[in-house]
Image (cartoon, rainbow, N blue to C red):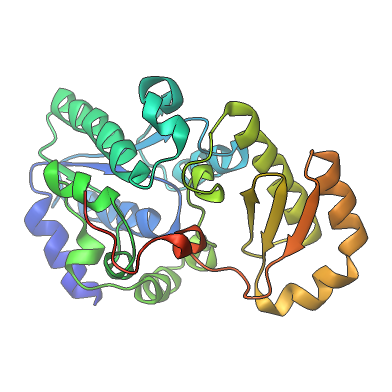
Length: 275
């Protein structure tokens, strides 16, 4: 697995790489590998690019900068405003990810050209190909290379290799953008996004280190936690309810199925048509 990824990166990175960097385990693993190859003289230049917007929490942005600094990685933080630049995004359409990825990676392509880098990469893994990911179409259209997916590395493979390499992010929970917390077709606003951010920050104080989501269904908050935390959540019901009611939610529920990626996609057809 490690050798296969190394050989793939060497083949595709000879003209330099611009990497979409989120600070998650997937892109962090790729950045670590690319920096190692640069040290060996096999990759001429590497640029990690993080797009900072209303769709990310301030905690996530701080973590990204900390991770890049610890790796001594060249990081460019690019402030963007997708809610203004992509007005249709405000209605949280089913193909939201397509439009957002097209917007972000077009900007990344511009930065790659300005710096003379020939390859654009991202951290899509093989598991992502099995899920509803309309953004993948945008990546294909723009010629983005996804080394983890193309070498068949699953999320578990990525975590195992990150652990082998001693990366602190090996067990880091996934952290998709805040728009994924809302039902398709619901209005996205700066206020609603910040409310979810504050709610999840409060929940993390109660469940430190746990993967969690605060899903929004109108005035109802649906909390997703690992199933191992459900009994503790019941014990903390009063604290959780009072905290989220203070943020304006009328109803607070605990999802008995636990945390799962893409739970908002449950209302979509079994096989949504690609964009």
